[in-house]
Length: 137
Image 1 (cartoon, one colour):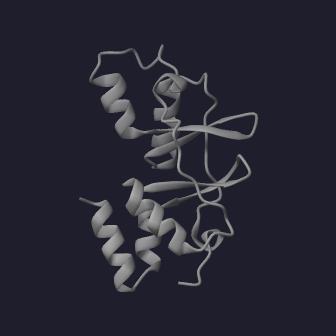
Image 2 (cartoon, helix red, strand yellow; image 1 turned 135 degrees about the horizontal axis):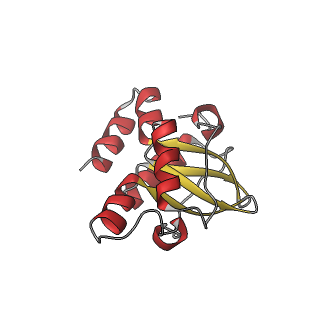
């Protein structure tokens, strides 16, 4: 494709510390109108919490969002991209791992996030459409 991740990733990403409560993360989501909130400790990306995580791992289990920390429910087996990676790398990772968002990192430091919607807006070719369709299943 010739497009790099840094050209399409969102750079101003709000994150939470691991000891933030789930209620705090939900407020970040509401204020930013976003579904994922990266979890960062000392500048390092250590996890991610999504709105679905809150529903499935907190609300559905009857846990208190004001007492549950994001580190208790965060996904930590993360797949990431680097700003210099080609968009094809992101497309392949999204399809292989069946995720809708990829944190952008330099080393372990969070520098942005790429969402399926970012790629869909950019991509007009058949491959992009096929990948977005595959992830959406």
